[in-house]
Length: 152
Length: 225
Image 1 (cartoon, rainbow over the protein chains, first blue to last red):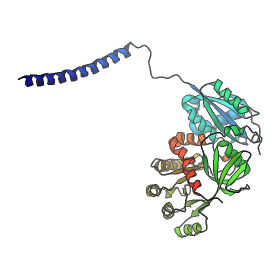
Image 2: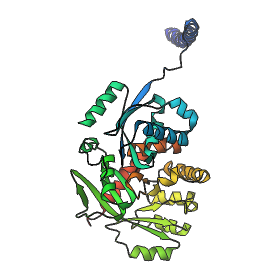
Image 3: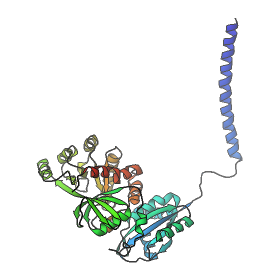
Image 4: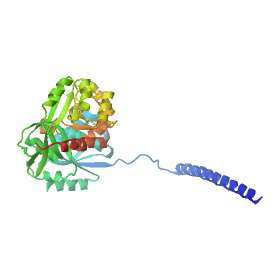
């Protein structure tokens, strides 16, 4: 008789345990739903961050700031289109014409596109040139430091 | 030498640890070698070498670049290929075959004297599914020059995209080369990786292997010239 009671208790405890888990899951779902309703801010849109690409231009002759900027723009638009260019908005932040080193700022999601574009540049102002990406940093300060290091 | 190449500070740039290899350069002169070294290339496979080099290395300033001679064989049929292969010193030279016929491509896949099979716009019809299976079985690398990927007809580039997906996506070893004749026709390694990622959807790992590990394994087997 005792065995039957123990068995019945065991079955009952298993049923109670599984039902309590189910209830917990449901209550969690309700809790999350209420929490999202109470939240004021909409999540999912991340703040656009910037990346700074340190580069070097190896050229037959000295090239100007404007020429480098135009060359990057031309190749970027040719291979990835205007819409991607506007999204990435690469901007030449600094460029030393004597040493041929500089920094380009770009949207963090489009860094790959800029690095790819740099490899495609073979001429700047009808002069044989190549553009060499060296380092990608998250802050302009670090990028400046890197350019200074390269001058040494 | 160019204006900026004389600058000694470039040595600092080339402290990158990876060994990049350009598996097909048409003409190697001192300027091209200097530029390749700045970019991080430590070995070049050249069809025409215009610099004095001895004991397999070309040394200038503090840099040392390994040079290997390349032979490209264009063949329309198997007897022609066999004849041309007989004239080549495959133990010292990097042998690449450009098959113009399906039979030649199949035959080239299982010949151990051949190091790679070249894909160009002329012979793209040769590289079908069966050829992919054969190349995968014999681990024969497919060599793809970069200029056909980024220049030329849009429709043709579409065909190349599908071929790339078929071969690189199914673990056929791939080698990426520049086919450069002048120093400014070389591509920086990081740009090659990102170009193939953004334009041909090839994962970074595959492209990195294609410009480092796969050609380096072939080169390291070659005897000193």
